[in-house]
Image (cartoon, rainbow, N blue to C red; front, side, top):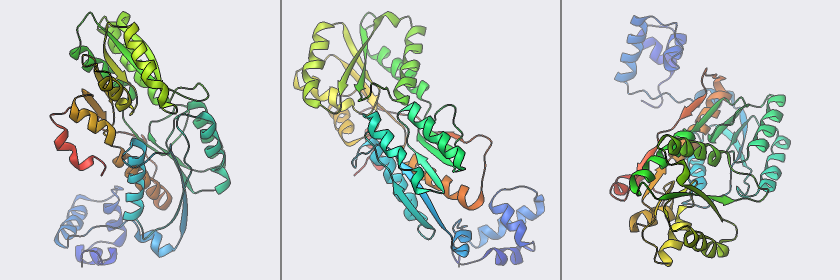
Length: 355
């Protein structure tokens, strides 16, 4: 009964119009206190769960959603976001949605441009974007704005764009938190290194830039600006990393903390472990398989987690609401919680660690 009861049945039982029930379900206002109370009492009595798919099913209308994010495997950060997309599509499988994916290499700006160029040709009804490169994302959003195609962001929001929704964390705050953590873990007269990944096209990722700003702002406020050093490593040519990392630490023996501004902290942790370097603390991002392993064995001191599955799920849900109900929010930006995970509390996050 709970899943089959219709709005008109609720209206009859509550003694109100079907339109009033609809306004209560969608929280649209213009409902008196007594009417809302009557409707909510009936909803509770019948354990009613409103299915937002009803309108789409009755209209038998199909929707095309294009999704573009960095390519990633299962257990990686972007792979977890894609899992969130797919979970939402399964949850709302009774809506006729044709979903097309446009994956790109997040370390190659030319790969990003190629993926973005194919989206407009699909003439989608909505687009979900996992942005990495700022200029390319702004250019894509301009084309979508001109075509009247709504779009949402996951992972980060880009300035000078007009998304109908975005799900991300406060990246500036993330950088500041990493600064605070490493300052608390290292001697006050030691140095802290920022490790970033090299990218084809010589472009830094949007999130990395914001995190670095937050990190530097915290270091400046703590009087340790002069103790910050920068280094880079490769996600595309890992065979070069061991020499690069060990040579850097050998040349900078005062470095006792490393901030890895993406989810590749395990690369640095594995190199340090292989070379018997135990006095350098690493803080990185995201509860991936490899990072979880390094957190468990002590190679990584702490991880910042951004709830990637929930980001992906919410983005698809927002797109469905926008397409069906034309929902528009005054503030489309939704900030996710920032979880700080240590080895001690890792077991309590098992439910969000990818299988």
